[in-house]
Figure 1 (cartoon, rainbow, N blue to C red):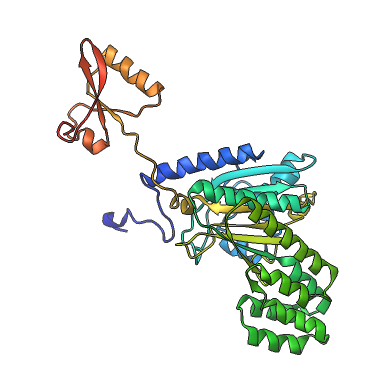
Figure 2 (tube, rainbow, N blue to C red; figure 1 turned 60 degrees about the vertical axis):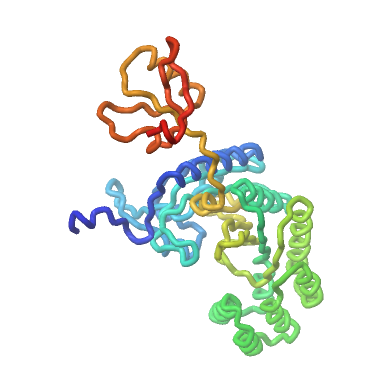
Length: 397
């Protein structure tokens, strides 16, 4: 690598510069304060863990996204965190061991081996919340409402919420008693939204005509709230867990509309996170972004590998993406102080900084002035004391 190339960053890695860095920090504080008000305690997971802990119950997707390295002390394989959720599940199950519902939140950097095909970047700042220890609909509702409140806090005016429930697919597949190969083929057909391929596969693999019709219907049931009524008709003879899942989606839908002005969309064949989701799933979209800004759902029993299976539900977001939603904060400007070492000047500067003012003191021989440093006031010695004077364009040079 030549000297001229040393500034290059690896593909998918980015740096955050002013003023975006300040916006991200303001939003980080606002979100963590919001979560605190909802009763969530902040945790800070380590950047690296042993692989057998880090990848527990997450499936192959996260395995492929994890940078792996060898611990020089033990010889064991470690991984850089690509998703905070498994780490927080470990904390709840093993480190905290609290009784009853536990609410945890976080905001931390993660590292991914490959850039996300929709969001891009391999070093997102993941922010989110997890609620452990409650299997009821109320916990899922709280998580969805908090995700929507987070997007509102970030500056989103128009939100589109997509709801689904992995339990519908799981129950129908279990009733069909498909082989592993047949289930994989069915999964791929649903994921590709290919009705012709789905119908052909179902008729070839499922002998029960009623169950076959339900699996085909699964690929057709997406759209507005009328989808729930259609689903009740199409799944009238389905296993009880399917009907229970529809009841849950309807309750979540009504709860959201009672508190938020959002557009709702249902997709009963949404299979994102199939390896670990166990119930409702959701994704929140904002116009101008071709991907979800917030994603979450229920993922019960992830802590089983740590000796404590617990109900769990939560969501996560990328702070970098969220910060692009936020409007630039009105500039408070700054105070320009002269390059002098004088006791009364030092006292005046210290007093202003204690009041929260941004004070930039010139350095000896400095060629740039207050304008280049976004200063709108200047400290001047007038009538025996240091005073802040407003700068005009003519006098700020």
